[in-house]
Length: 205
Image 1: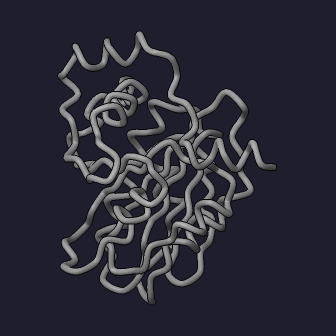
Image 2: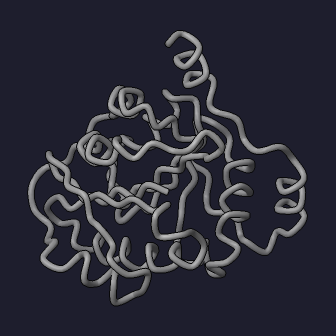
């Protein structure tokens, strides 16, 4: 799980939301599988020292909003954390979309995400950096709200249900975790494969 948090001007709300969601994910994934960056036009890694709310608060201490926005900067600072061969990658962005698409930065990272999750802090008419990038990569982009991951221990199953329910090229609303039939369907299927563009690049390497 790669959390990338927009801390450009007016994004103090993004910082607060990111902390709440990261705390939940610590109940669903080992701490070493969660990687976090904050970005403006440059990015920097946020390192957790404890898998707790206090640990998240400490990690974000001194992080304040200000500056421009380049989503690619948030990706580049985490691209050194490569997944294992049997692991899927999920990018979760927290912020608005007042920036340019960052498709090439994602491709260059070599991380090959299976999907984007998007915690949209505020509406930005005329901008679609995250959703456009997902569409260009041919992967789903699902929206996340405060109720999406109500049960931290069900987060992995909920993610797969969201990915399966989200058409590529559309930003679908969060799917309620209570849709057990959909979750059961996903759990019975094979693990999601790499997106087509990633498989092509791997074959060509």
